[in-house]
Length: 302
Length: 215
Image 1 (cartoon, rainbow over the protein chains, first blue to last red):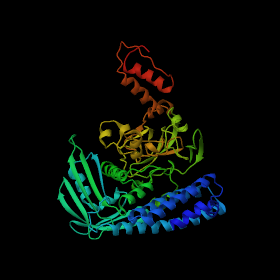
Image 2: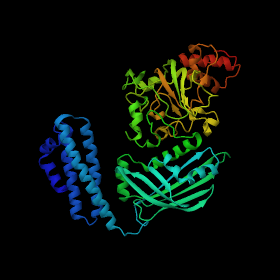
Image 3: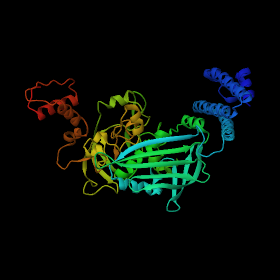
Image 4: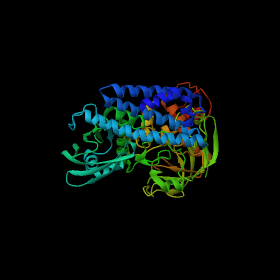
């Protein structure tokens, strides 16, 4: 496929530009052959290399670049050009899904299937904050795991299923929901809590949180470490980042909201970021002007 | 309502926008009776401060009458009908910065603190009508404004002083006063103020207030 596309884009760039609805742009005269050349690189790698998993990921990265370019092109066009662009974008989106599945598959099959031992696939996140409440209070709030979704952007729900067990649901990049069971593996009231996913989790993960009295004698330092086994490893992480998912920033913001909830009673909303923990799309936001009744009624999913 | 909005670099427009509503339990809605343009609004208008968006309601110096309060605001603190001057930084009253009365450093009121932190190295409090870096809050150059944490910042005016006599408590009088205070002026000092705009004039008045001095 890369071979065919690459040859077409290099041999007949003007026809590709007309078909895609970008024949009115001078930039596309340069971009289309460049994308063609890139496709030939994918093809060469996929056909000759023994590390096909890694080369499959280069296609995913290429798809991400193409979707961005198409998105920019759509924003500036109307009429039949826009229709042609939308059709091409639909096709590329479909190809992206196939590439992604292929790449995940190829990476999985090329790595020994030992859970937790995958190199490059796990990601460790750390974040800290200081909350002006005593440690037992901060600990108690976190220990009631059903509170976590009020301030953690990705979590949809945590349901307690036993003394130490719980069921977690989260939304993952690319709009996919993932769920897993978790168990608390260490518990020192007021000081420390550790948990990990159990069974065959989509995204195997574990976490530790420590609560330390701050030097001011009033506040609590909260230290969080999360470890995720990311689908697609390092490259999957890079693609997610490219689409605006910065996991470290998200954990920092999660802890900021935890602090808001414990110190002020709720997650703070502004007109630009009215949906509290749904502030994932940090910029551009909605304008800093009051919400209409319609927007309020539709809520965070509008 | 009608509101003054940012409409791109060097362009502002008075437009129709929705009326503000309570979003958090400690909000109040204020019907604005007087509002001002700050010298620092120029930094937003000319694009010097980033993260302004088309349609952002401007203005951070305003006062008015409370017409609605959220369920979390104690009636002893604020009621419908109260006349208030609203300080420009939004403060939660509960974090370490607020406990130390460093309200402009409030650690909770800026939902976009992550952006401010990347930009400045340290976030600032939420500020009305002052870009998305300071939270993306609609401002007070409008008929109405939503005031978060209304039980902390707003200053009740219970005397018959006119709007013009108290409005400057929202920003520029404290700014001038802080300038004078930071100079640690001694009685024997001769003080010169560069720039005799409103903040400069308040700095001079404040210098006279903190210490008898030659200006």
